Image 1 (cartoon, rainbow, N blue to C red):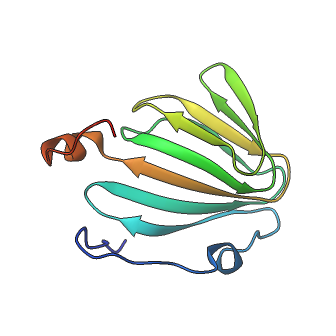
Image 2 (cartoon, one colour; image 1 turned 45 degrees about the vertical axis):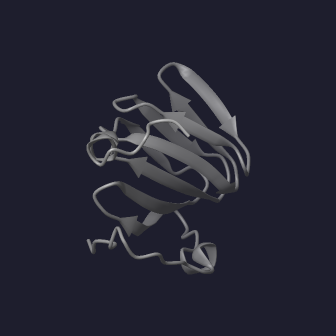
Length: 122
């Protein structure tokens, strides 16, 4: 997986068009990957799922289109486009796509951010 230079700005256009929903599949593309964060865009066909798992990083999930049931711990969230969920590091989560969907996932390495001297609050 290629690394994105932390000191170089970049932009992506037409991500949803370049990551189509494929029948009976889950696909993803890493669009940013460096020591501070990773951004991944997922495409899920209806009925596709991610089984329960956790990330050591803080995670921000945003549904871009479609409909997803996103479970955090014991709480199920019925996400619609524009909804955002924040996951603390280590939080168990899973999802099921109720319709063809695109999801953006931003993972922040809290330890790397703290080591850089960045403020944890805005």
